Image (cartoon, rainbow, N blue to C red):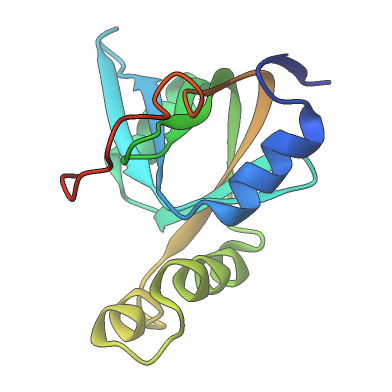
Length: 154
C-alpha cells in the first residue's frame, strides 16, 4: 500500500502522472554501493510505474542486484510541481513489448518516426521495469511562483 504525502491526494497524483509526459528519474544502487541515476519513459497504471528498456541495459543488472529505488517525476518549467518517492522494482519480459509500444505512443505521439521504428524493432530484447511505490510525496509551487514568468529553458 502506497503512502501519499504532500500537497496532493491520491487522485491528484494520478492525474498529474497521467497528464505529464516528462520522464521518470530513477535512482538505483550499483553493485559497488554507489548510486546511479537513469531517466526512463513511464506509464502509471493501477498505482504502479511501468518502464521498458533493453534487457542488457546496466540499470537492469543494478535492479536485479538491489530492487530498491527512489524516483522523481517533476515539471521542468515554472511553476514547478511533481512527485518523488521510493519503492521496489521488478524486472520481467512479460508485457515488455506492449509496455514499450504504449510508451512510444505516449512520448512520441505515434509509431511513424525512425526512432519509434528503431525502438520497436523485433530484434531488440526488451524488459519491463515495474516500480511499486511505497511512498509518494507531492509538491506544487504554483502559488509561491505565481508571479514568476515561465522561461524557455529546460
